[in-house]
Length: 337
Ligand code: EPU
Image (cartoon, rainbow, N blue to C red; front, side, top):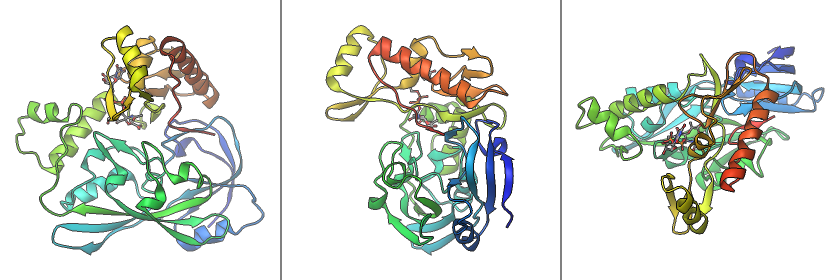
């Protein structure tokens, strides 16, 4: 394995930001990962997965380690469920398609989410009423400092809405090497109640959907609303949807009777940041090569040569205006580096 120097990270982040890594290594085995983490010559190291949830704002004066660990297998097959083990470098959507080919149910609503399997637990990826944690069994991660492999259970990961242990106490300390999922082998639980999935299915005349049909419906909805990072650089939702108290929600509802909302618990309400950003008039706005997507106001885009700073600047303007108009602070979902 070679350690390269001054490598452009443009192909390694879905925003397509052209910054350089001082050192760069691609690891394809646990042995290589162990070896590279032991190299004292490079004291500062960073683990890079699919690069689909980050905004790079400057050159990185460190050793960037790209996880290229591949492999997926069924490790336990029971009558009604199977457990699979997937290596961290696998592409998330390829994994979803692989499970569907084997008629394993659970991940279909998470179709077409960009990124790698090893990065997915970090922010507990979610879409259309399903989150990674719903099918997660455990993950294995190498501690960067000691090169020891640790197993993290569902509880250990402390998953929340786009949250986990790996975004807090565990931040920057581990490289996730593999993830185990538990999936159904029959009587799949179909989740079609969220958003427009039901509508999409009935429009195509499907009355008794299979998990493959659900995946297809999710793919068409996403393709209509969300930009393909291979064509237009982006990192999915840039901000998290804020969760507010019922009191605050009631006050907002008086001023904006049309405000959409989702109940999170008895006293908490989630408000779509996209709706607030849209109401502030940002949808479709373009400043140089940085912009707000024309169909989904929560997605910031790079029209070609935007710098991370330019995108960050636009994000700050959005945060400020949303705070002014609604009194609510919205926080980035992506990691800003
Ligand atoms: N809306 C607007 N204007 C817009 C876009 C949306 O007013 O430009 C309104 C919609 O009408 C709807 C509400 O905002 O009432 C919510 O929109 P949508 O259903 O598109 O979902 P979201 O809350 O914006 C979340 C996730 C997405 C996920 C979708 C579907 C977050 C931060 N984002 O978006 O996840 O795909 O739900 O489940 O939770 C991601 O994390 O990168 C991501 C794309």
